[in-house]
Amino acid sequence: MKKIIVSTVAIITGLVSCDSWLDVNENPNRPQEVKNNLLIPSVEATLAGMVGGHLFNTAGFFVQYTEQAPEANQYNSLCENSFDNDLFTLPYMRFYALALEDAKVIMEQAAENEEWGDSFVATVLRAYIFQVIVDFIDQAPYSEALKGNEIPMPKWDSGESIYAGILNELDEAEARLNSASRVSADLILNKDLARWVQFANALRLRLYMRSSQAQDNSAKVRELIQQDNFFSGDIKFDVFVNESGRHNPWYSTNSFTLSATNHVGSYPIVSYLKITDDPRIADIFKKATGPSDYEGMIPGSKTMLSDKNDSYSFLTAYDRPTAPAYLYTQSELQFFLAEAYVRFFNDDAKAREAYESAIRSNFATTRGLADDPATIFGDNAPCAWSTATTPEARLKLIAMQKWVALCMVNNAEAWAEARRMNYPALSPHPANSINADATIYTAGDFIAPWVNAESGGKLVSRLYYPKTAVELNNNTPAQAGRTVPVWWDK
Image (spheres, rainbow, N blue to C red):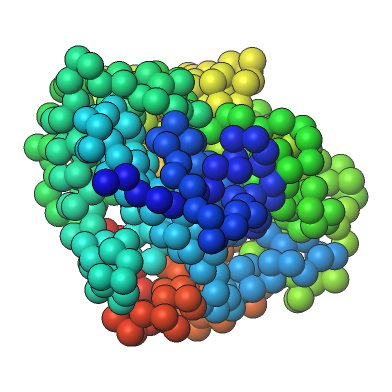
């Protein structure tokens, strides 16, 4: 029996800001049956809106790409780690009430009509969404979720069991594919099912690598890499145009809707780009109008200093209304391969090849730069592979360059990887000391915010369980502290 639902298909005809862009004005007394050719783009749009909008913005502060501009106040709580349990409420609601609900209907309709291509695409999107949820809040409703009145208060599953569950779902969905399988609609990979399989393989690799310090995934990683069936190019939601209501979600909220300049570059990323003489700095930041150079702001220092906006570098993203929402870049994939070749293959040559390929891809494919990345990794360059002579040094090099490559590309993934790989390292010096004497600071190190709601100079490791879940689900666990690592962060 087909489901009768009210969907979020407004995305097909127009996009609005990331905080309102999937709302529809449907009469709830006259629900409509919505086919998969509309539901699949709806799920894709919701995912892109969160990863490219709300979560992109949130993670950008935690991974120390951005700071609150001195003459604005929109994001003070993110810079100072003083946010509450409302920060993840919007993504939680959008993911469960919209994207995951629509994905469920897609899979039910696909099973009824044996449309296994549609079912597989929905499963990949569902897996991606649950991965993001776990990476931000650790536990979540999974095994009992999305059952409506049957289970109105679903239990919360561990992040480890959710990772295992979505990996199993991917295997089962792929096993159902056959020569007749097709995708009915798609705004990400143009209905190319073979590329969706490659995307799924890369997603498996991400899940295995992310959890590889909490469990032994080495055999599974080696098997995936030896199969060598990953995507080319970047996986991105690239439908935005320079029209009101159809902008990139981060731009739509932070440049178009708020009409404010809240974000300046953070001191760690700007310092690292400068010391490594990285030409990508001009793609990410603008020169400060005061000192006429690229200048980053000490984390959490806004209320401690009397600086003005012109002292710091603002983001070029303020001028990019049509930028795509990146879900998985070739650069990120190649960095995972480089790490795996170091840790699981002990193959220095292939690790170097993947490392340099990751940087090339970030220059050319993602950022559209004609600059020669050899300035980053060529002979005698600051980030040359030859500068790292031990496995740990190579892993640090990979992690630091991944941090750069993901900057203002996929901030959520950057924050997850920084927590997992423990690079950038946390500076042993407090912010006020670094501000007084920059010579004590190692460029690129994270800095505990000057004004910090977390005692002991700690950084945030997770978000609170969302307010909506706390209020409406009695099975929501007791809140863990913001500095308690998620399950894979060992």
